[in-house]
Amino acid sequence: MHGRLKVRTSAEEAARKKLEQQQKVKMFRAAMGRILEKKTAQEHDAEMMELTAKLLSSNPDIATLWNLRRLCILARPEGEDSSAVFDKDLGFTEMCLMVNPKSYCAWHHRCWILENAPKADWQKEVDLCTKYLKLDERNFHCWDYRRYVVEKAGVTPEKEFAFCTEKIEKNFSNYSSWHYRSKLLPLLYPNVEDPSRPISEEKLKEELELVLTAAFTDPNDSSAWFYQRWLLGYAQPELDLAACRIDAKQNLAVLSFSKPINLSTGGYKLTVSCCDNCNEASKWMPATDGNTLDTTWTLRSAFGIKQDSNPGMVSIVTPDTKELTLQLQTIQAEGAVGVKKPKFGYEFGSAIVDVLKAQLASCLELLEYEPDSKWTLLTAALLMKAIDRRGYHETIRQHLTKLETVDALRKGYYLDLASKWAIENRLEQWIEAGKLSEGIDLSGLQLSVVHYTPYLATADAINLSGNRLVNRNLGVLRDLVFCRRLNLTNNAEELDTTVLKLPLVEEIIYNGNEQQQLAKELPTKVESLVL
Image (cartoon, rainbow, N blue to C red):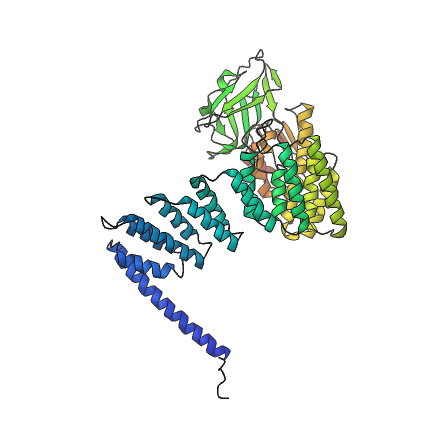
């Protein structure tokens, strides 16, 4: 038995760790107590720096202690070498980052030091980022810091693009590098012919080929698939005019946008060529009471329509001097109306479409071997939509339906995506028909949510029967300002339509039996209900 190392039992080990933890807590409380005393006495001296250093060196995520260090640095004695003070704290933050490379507080403090130091070596910081990204190439804190310091150091986008490419080639599963690449591409390869598109067609083709290689190297890794979605244009829409209708008989006008804005007090300049008393932006009111930001705005007034206005145009200049326009398709004495077709994605040239078709063929081939690969199923649906969303519509729905089972945790996402794409088809057909004041049929689409309601603000009637809508979906229907007849029969549950305060509604059809209560709570314009 002699000479053998004694192995602690589990109970002994637990007791030892507990005692060790109690000692650490005791030391921490003592140090924090002393720090708070000095903070109250405003003693920002060397002792404060030493105390904060002891605690931060083991836990660099205490923001209060970093704030106190900054106060100590600012309160340093006159005549002290400021460069040495800042350099010393730079070294300290580097040590803290070795403890926790993803400490928000330590990275923030390093930025503060460099901004306040008499002289900052920005190139050294770039080199530091390169060093850290060799240790952990997916540290998004370091990637954020790198974008900050390369701008200060004057590093060219070309060099950074090469750095991103190197990192991606070493590890395709590098979200931050793909993201940084998406920021550099528009600077290096802008689309001169269509500024609304981020990169040129030629470069887009190259990027699609690169991302296909990455995606098929590991089909279960999502980083390349997400980058491909950016290349295909599946991003949040930019601010644009959506719809406008002026009704001289009802003394009501609506103006809607693709994103919420503050039209009345946000510094927007509005011009409606056929209606002089529509041009004062401050008089417009949000469709939803109490909102300052809204997608849909209304105006009540006695309107005089100038039928000789040619072309009939709505123009709005944003606070950053960007002009948005909307063509009015119909201008008559009783009113005017116009709806802009939304951008459902990029429209690609034939060369890009050929690449997308080749990628779709590869996806379908992969699905033969891995039929339940969720990223491949979703990407195939996205590619079909980019190639021909109408022609592939039924196949796309089949893919999304299968994804509800394959990736059940995200079933709601696939339902909402299917809803959005189904509405796009019907909305596009309705706008192309040109009868923008008449009803739109959105029935039987199995909608779990209603998208694009600002574009439906001019419609007299909306048929939403035979869908999966629930009460929480009704809020967006407040955009349907001119709706007189709303059909909500055969949805997922009995809908509480009392939340709808539509100014012109005359008839709501729904699955309910509370006719008297509904009639009492709806606006006075209600004339009939069909149950």
